[in-house]
Image (cartoon, rainbow, N blue to C red):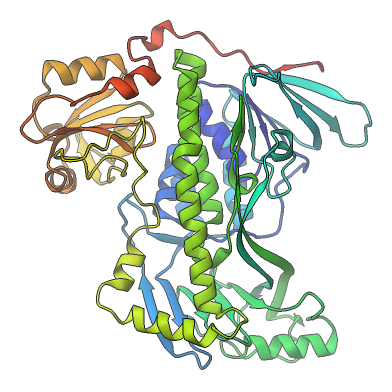
Length: 532
């Protein structure tokens, strides 16, 4: 396996593959972690992914739970408030603020501990090629820093985690679908010991002339984002005075703020926020993940989250195909499942962006008025705050059958409470490990046992878990006796209440080759290279 790009998405994919025993080689043009902050927020589902790669405790030490999102008018009066819980469905705070370089260092440290993973820094990939029928092996051509010599490596699959300017995307002939949002914003990160007026969440100023975003990242770290033209400068005496005016609603920055000892501008960068979706995420054994597959404005904080969801969705399927002989069609479910969710997130971010910033057209005031009115409807803000990851659409791995009891659970995530097993308190996923799992509230029937055995699935009876009743209540609401969980903790199928079997497992069974056991799997060789 070759992974192009060793940012958070690429390294997370490598770590997830390693947990399934799949070796990988990461090719990265930078030699070290990119030092400047970019992404600053993750949700509880992504915290659960970080748990699966073994860094959640370290991440908790540097992350800061946030209260949610507030929409403010130009005079900083609250229009709407979208609160986020400190204990979400996945067992973590629903919103956590952090510094991306800190997260990347944790991921790199975890990578260094995995013998299955190898990282080559200072490497520029120049081409990705495969046979016209899309079969493996895939050839990746690269050059090392300071060299004009082409080197090659071959692999069973290639993951393009190489960002918005992805070479991998071009290599498989993918083009962007424009989802019609483009604005130029200035991002300013500040470290200051001065008092800062903050809600301890994200604040979005809904103002047609000067929209802005503000959030606290750490004890003395803050981020402001302002919609500013690229030719507006915040350096020099005039620029520093302009910066002072911009941040005045939150803090009394000194004159000459950019150079003050107690108000340090760590960086400022101009970004063009875009909304785009790749029309194709896979060709043969080459895949796109993260910004290579989708670009979203940052207004709901889902850019990095979407990329890590890609990695979680794809890696267990790749491992199943490469190691356990699953049908190659299993890999088609990656785009089928992830693309609708990516589109949903992008459209939500665009809608929120237009509503919050007001856009720049004559309908701006009307949009803000509509948002304000809608958010006063009981339950609206709670519904928006509740979940940014709706159920997966029906497909081979999501058995949603009209008219059958228990269908409401399929395609959703299993909750993750704390449980006590053999006297030890742990999170549910630490009990389930990295396999399929049969979670049941009733004694397993022979049919259920046969399915679990074919999938090498752990069978967990609720009576063996001492939790707070979360799982039993969840199954009862879904009117299910048992659920079959995929390795990514999505409910693939249910045993409806009053029955003892999965109604029709043939569709997913044919993809997963459930008759083949792990002990029969062929090993996956490491990537082959022309270099020693």
